[in-house]
Amino acid sequence: MSLLSYSTDINTIDAFIMESPFKTIGLIGKPNHSGAAATLQRLYTFLNALGFNVLLEQRTGHQLADVPKEKLVKLIELGEQADLAIVVGGDGNMLGAARVLARFDVAVIGVNRGNLGFLTDLNPEGFEASLEQVLSGQYIEEKRFLLEVEVYRHGELKSANSAVNEAVLHADKVAHMIEFEAFINNDFVFSQRSDGLIVSTPTGSTAYSLSGGGPILTPELNAISLVPMFPHTLSSRPLVVDADNEVRLKLSLENTDSLQVSCDSHVVLAVLPGDEVLIKKADKKLRLIHPKNYSYYHVLRTKLNWGSRLY
Image 1 (cartoon, rainbow, N blue to C red):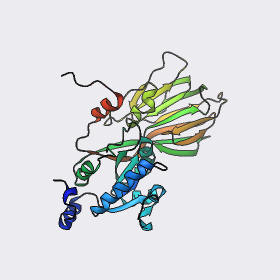
Image 2: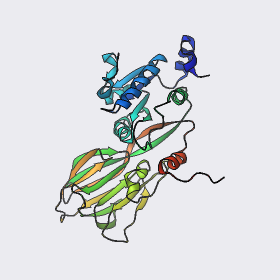
Image 3: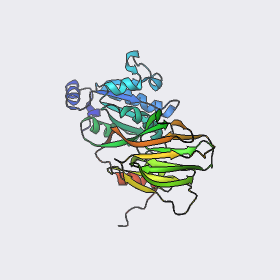
Image 4: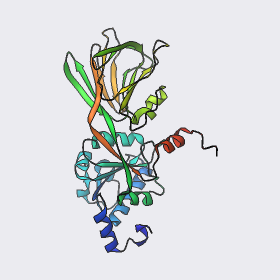
């Protein structure tokens, strides 16, 4: 029987919380999205009824009714205090939160209020039963690595950020070729004229990289893919390398366009001709939580419309 059916039993609720691996739960919504706000309100009411200490990320939490001011916190504070963070939105919203939450030892699960939802497992129409199982300790946990991206100019670090999905070197104008060299662990690999290069994690291999013709990397692989964007040669192909390698991209001085490196399409780092971009696996990992019935291959079949079983 679900705890929801006898939630007025205080002793049962107290026992449930005592046995749960999570005591403080943070909620993160999707700004200016009425559906996400409704799901966030429902989550807040549900978790409060169960007696959990609930915090809300302040940018979206202020939309909810009857939330004490002390429960509204910045995302970094939420990461510092919460045992579990629940992100309501699409994959983009999850990526934005994940880049911050990966710095802290906080588990993360998503409620899908977007389109594809590769990273958001819970159904907004009936998340309670699955979430209750997770809260009771019945879940699958996996750790996804991130990329650390650094831009150097004349040997000096100019900017840096992280990416859950991918780092993309490209011109800031559409369909403008750029010229660069690629090194792996300081070993020269190739020079290239193309629209850019996508350096993807396994998590990002089903995102922009997939659209660019890159391979799907299953999440447990310690690998990254280098996917050329419209290269000016038919012999250029995606390359998969060990994720413990360092990828260095050196921009030609012949480039005349403004260049940039995009991290998950959210954060943009400016790059100039002659700059070097260093991409490597970040030290911190994202603790991603799934319900017990989660299957990565089921997600692929569903999201990519693969064929069902014949028999």
